[in-house]
Amino acid sequence: MASTVRQDFQYASPTHQAETAIAGMWLFLATEVLFFGGLILCWIYSRHFNAPGFDAGARQTALWIGTLNTAILVTSSLVYAIGLAFVRAGDTRRLIQCCLLTLALGIAFLGLKFGLEWRLDFAHHLFPADPYFWIAGSLSGGARLFFVFYFISTALHGLHMVIGVGLLLWIIRRARRGEFSPLYHTPVQVVGLYWSFVDVVWIILYPLIYLVGRGQ
Amino acid sequence: MRRDLNRLLIVWLLLLILGAAEVAASYLPLPRAWRPLVMLPGAMMVGVVALGFMEVRRGSVLVRAFAVAGIFWLLVLLVLGSVDPLTRTNYPVPDAQLR
Image (cartoon, rainbow over all chains, first blue to last red; front, side, top):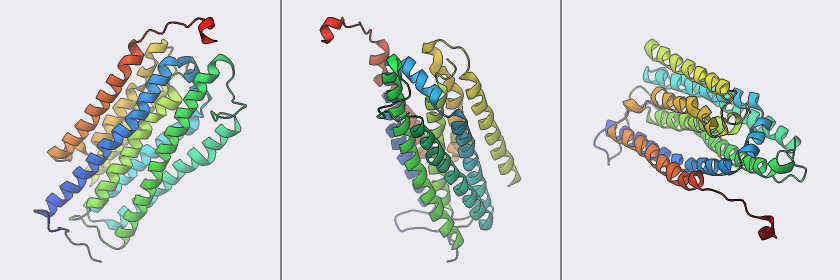
């Protein structure tokens, strides 16, 4: 299908339609901020009353995997933003290449997180319900609470990543059909906002999990 | 196009530098109450992503209103939710009362 300027009947102009779609995504992201806000509040509350246990838990996390994953996600946002710049310049082929690279980086993140890091965590008895939980003694309760936060937050973030991967595949499919042009690429922009937001969530989770209390 | 690429590369480099600063800050010998300050470079990274990759400044007034509203209500949630635990004094319960 050749790319054309899209305008559905309820919008005054194609620009109005594009602005509405982008504002709609931002509104959705505002609700997501509050969704993850509850999780952050749990961290503040639980850490305040169990700081030594949280510090002990943070020291058991695989910093190198978390740091590598942060670099991977930041780079994936860069690559996608470059793809957006290409489609604005009319180069759809480069957009597809950038989306494929973003997809590969996203899958690499998921592989490191769930294929390697979670596996190591289970092997080291860091699952909070494990009867042979690694951290014993007075720090055990706080450390278990830390790993409850760790597993829930990374699982929720991972779920958002999987949705992002699906959206990237959708963009690649539409780009291959030639549906995007410098005049119409709103879905590329909207998915880019979502992908960068998932990046932002990880940027917040990274210090909460790996850094705060690690040096003590 | 080249200007866009240069701008995006600068944003990416800034994010990597801030990330490295955050890791370095986590090894500073801070008192327990000050340890969450390690997150300051992370908060700056969020701002850099919002401005550099999400182009919040290029958005309409409605987009900026939604972005500001998200941060505003997050702060309301975190501040009001933290007031109680952060200001409460926990007195130890004697062992006899726990039995």
